[in-house]
Image (cartoon, rainbow, N blue to C red):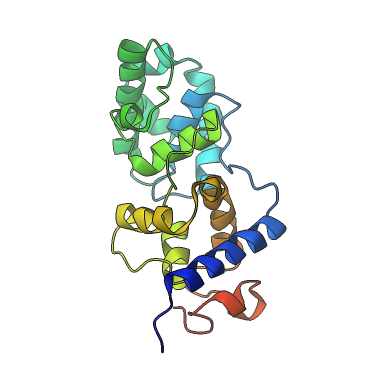
Length: 219
């Protein structure tokens, strides 16, 4: 198979974006955060290796018990863990929630910072979480949040062959013009859940089938 030229790959990537916009014109964050950047940060932190649906089941009780940053900063991690125990790695996440609240309170006056570097200083917050928070809460687009869905789709579409989320993000940022970065995460996550599923992708009904080098081959 001939190697795809940079120009051809860009044209294919832009067509993927156009079709995503057609199918998911109003894609939104699946996590419930009530318009609060701090609650969004905690929700995304909790969502690592856990479904958004699972997170949404525990956060109402979490915020009922600890309604403010100061309340969570003063919490016992063991008690937080009991509230979120149905999600994966709940003990580590509970500790990070409390530490995150403490740092936000002590270093940022109770407000979530608005730069990707400052966000990544918060316990439990990596680049993916920082990208989601900036994009969703503040409309600031500094990159593309590469979760398991985005990573999988980028590789199946042959937009990246890199072995880490960070390198995959760099590949996508180099491929897509900046104005396309913002919608990728929400749209691709929906696509990954509905069609480009990890174990059994629905290739036969995929609206990107003619653009996908992995059509009928993805495992």
